[in-house]
Length: 202
Image (cartoon, rainbow, N blue to C red):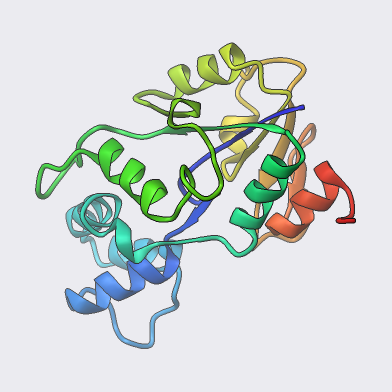
């Protein structure tokens, strides 16, 4: 089994990071939900799309330290490593923000992984992490890495006609109701993903 994992909003959770940064910048009311989606929807409703875009650039760049792994994500990675399961991280991510300070978003994501101990403690080789500039390049990487399973939070990516055939597709959807488009297997937590793919811990 060779498992590919998406990065943004799958391995790493930005909800509290977006809330903290939006409050610091006085972009939202304090009583707003601690949710990236809720903050996005609020700013778009206020016709403040540019402020939302700039906030994203900050969080994905110099504000990456505010983000945390999803609960159970690193336990999943460690269990895969202990059991000799081949892992890779494959992300679609622009190199620079669309607005705001110019910072290398690929380097920021790599630093987050390094600071979290993914390379040193978990032992995932740096060369098994791929940040692709386009969706098509991400799909091609999933194929070239010969993933047998891919985990992503975007159903539109997993249902792309160009998605590599024969790859088991898990939809990471913590806020979902357990349903998904045909052909996808929904998981609401990393613990559920571990049970589905690795079985019960011994």
